[in-house]
Every structure is written in C-alpha cells, then in structure tokens.
Length: 171
Image (cartoon, rainbow, N blue to C red; front, side):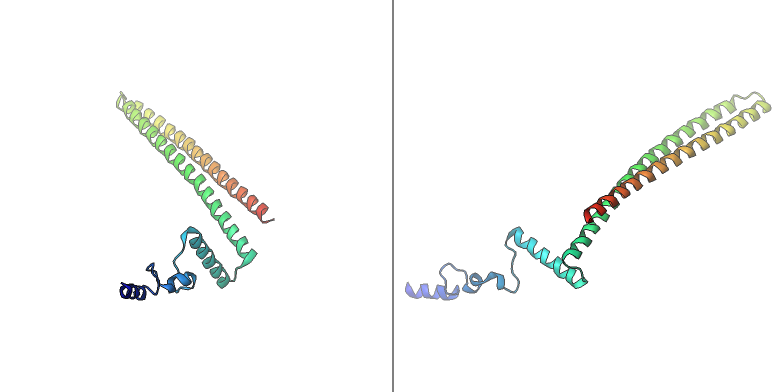
C-alpha cells in the first residue's frame, strides 16, 4: 500500500490532496491567472484601463477629469435625444391628426361639390374649399413650427443644465 501511495503522490505533484504544488504555491504568478471572483475581475479591468490611459497619455487626475467629462457629455446626449424623440413622437401624432382632419374636410368638400345645382354654384363651392384648405395649411404650419420651437428649446435647456452641472463638478 505504501508503494501505491508514493506513486499517487508522485502523479499529483507530491501532495496527497491531488493539487500540484506549483499551482498551490503561487497562483498569482501563473502565466494566465484566473480571476478569483468579481473583485479580481474588477481589479484587472481597472488595471487595463489605467494601462490604456497611460499609453494614451492620460493618467491620474487628468484621466479622471476626462472620464467624468465624457460621462457628462454622454448623459447630455442621452437627455437631448430623449427630448427630441418625445417631440418627434408628438409631432408624428400631430401630423396623423392633421392628415385625418384633411381627409375628412376633403370628403365633406366632395359632398358639397356633388350637391351643386349649377356651374356657378360649383365654382363658388370650389373657391370656398380652396380658401378653407389654405387657411388650414397655414394653421397647421404654425402649429408644427411652434411644436418644433418648443422641442428645440427643451433640448437646449437640457443641454445647458448638463453644461452647468459639468462645470460645477469640475470646479
């Protein structure tokens, strides 16, 4: 039994628990160390980021400042995009309402034209329909322009607020 035990110890690196001595001795000195949990993975990512920033010439406080500024810029873009997407959605809904209203007016106008009893009455109704359509086009154009201006103002305010916060954080 002693010979078998010695043979087993030899195959497992001289240890009876089956783990070679080289692995137990210094796992952090291995060529490809395996991360020991999330802390090790986070440490390795942080070290890689530091090496990259040193390679690019950004380190210490300057690197932190640039990273903070980059995060603030991305947040400003996200907020502006959100405001503009909401404005686009509201504008799309508004356009659909305008198109539906125009179809209804056109349908009603066609009914009025079909009820004309003379050429003169047909010409009068057609003139009224053209005038009404122009009035609605102008009204709808004003509405679209006002909504667009409000959206641009809201996006500008969000961007200005982020600029103020970034400047305050850097001071």
